[in-house]
Image (tube, rainbow, N blue to C red; front, side):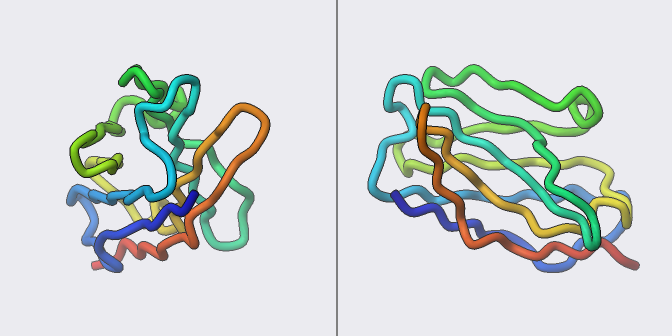
Length: 116
């Protein structure tokens, strides 16, 4: 299974960040697979942001759920992250990750910088 993140490198404060993860080697509708977004700010640990399940159900970190949305396009086998009203604190490497119930696979990550 391979995952590849895509999206902008730079975003201005208060704008919306949109990232897409393109998946190959597995269907995002495969039963019991969960598709996650995880980020790592500079000098800090990994932060789980949320996930979309095989059936389309979504789950969010309580600290981010008010301005985070995860969706999917089953025809393209992609899932996406939307983060509203970004601030410099949202600067991070963003990863898409599959939780395959006993195994996982990560995209290479994409650096997003929020600055004016």
